[in-house]
Image 1 (tube, rainbow, N blue to C red):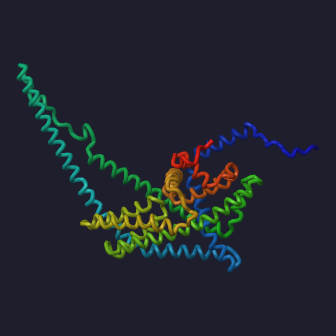
Image 2: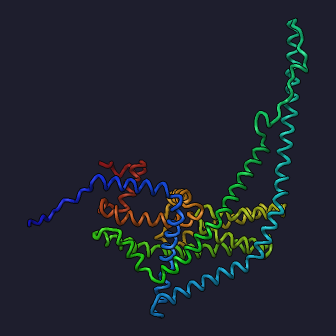
Image 3: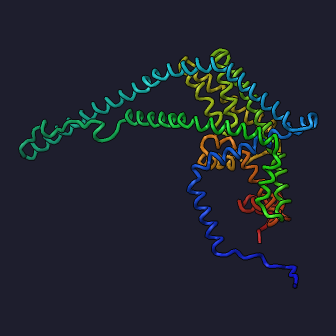
Length: 406
């Protein structure tokens, strides 16, 4: 039997590609049902990577993973319970204040719109009367029988007959917004189920992660195992740093908002606003905007210059976040291009819903790691970051002295 050292790769039959196409089609069709499962699994992996260094250090003292995992889970449950218990009362009072103030906001918003609508009707009546008078004058000058002005002047059209008024459009916009909130509330149970599943999934993963990672590696051909291990090692080094920096940023932003809102709204409302700002800090770019809305509603309820002070305070926190927290607290190796994060947010939100925003930033880093290990080392082995930056400058005509690419 002859051994061929350079055996040709096995050719797949047509049935193989047909099966792969059918499987891909079925996956796309069922993605809506599978997206919560995929998001839960992704969150379990990321959180397990983030907490694993703590479990590994505690494991050296206890000799196993179960006791450290139980201690971490118990500590997390305790913190969540204490935060929920301490913020339940203030949160309830703040929600009551906002709900009581909303009708007043709506009334103040509707009054100028109604006034504009009535002025438009009066102006239209006046314009029609002037046009009828001009028509009658022209008919008299031409010797034609005059048309009865009352017959010529048609009744002014109602706004609802020709075009929707600003007020009706605003009503529809508010109804659509309320419908969106209703849909979010309706899906709240599904989100809660996902979070509970993720919590228990992380606990069981941390107790014994080797079978899960072994199963993942078993899906790859043997010749790719080394590359896969390197990718997992790099992800395992990145995720804890990202999670720690994100948690530290959440704490700092929450404390800053709490301290700035305390003189304006008092201790209880400031505590709730600080918690909201800290939680939304986990969402890149959009988090500060979402967290400022409840503060603005409370500020509008107080009236005067309070809304302006609230805007100024949140703008100051946002500026401090962009110029101090992100550059100095976040690790240097975690620099992510804002455009990549924004597109990742859009993709994750379209694929997984609101909770998908939590994994947008780490997904960009994971894709970058996979690109470096699987694509760049194979197809761009001698190209450095300096080379790519130089080529980008030439493409943008920013560095013509560097020469032309041949």
